[in-house]
Image (cartoon, rainbow, N blue to C red):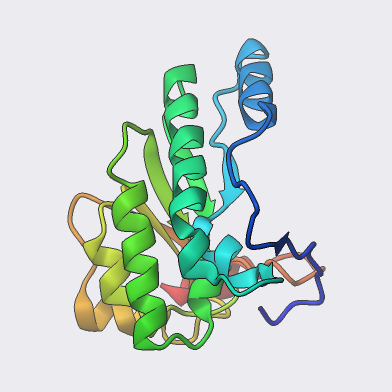
Length: 192
């Protein structure tokens, strides 16, 4: 994703039993609520999780998708029951070069996931633009969409060319998240 960050690569065997285990996201949300802070839980999205995983057997991401989506549905339902108004699902894999099969896979994952009882969902992308799937993202029932207007060189032109869906919130990434220096606010204001 054009960063110098590393991540733990999940390895999934053919006989892996994928399910939501533990309550850490719920515990952290409840702890913040007790402190008077209503947070927006943030987790890596299922598409990116499946795309970045390493499959050690003959099964593919598509084979494991139903179980992963079921685990995410459980998480969203539990967060909704706990009082979360929003959940942010980070999908940096959407800024990579995607083919038609990748886009179809993304659509199928989110069509199933977003059909559950859930909080509002913010789909967040970063470190690039979503040129291959912008219209697909806009067509899905996300309540908010986050786009990168710094590294995403085509984000603004995509919004201008195709519009932004009414009834959804745009979360505009306008501060360089990789820059260690003080932000140049004048430059940031000129982006939009």
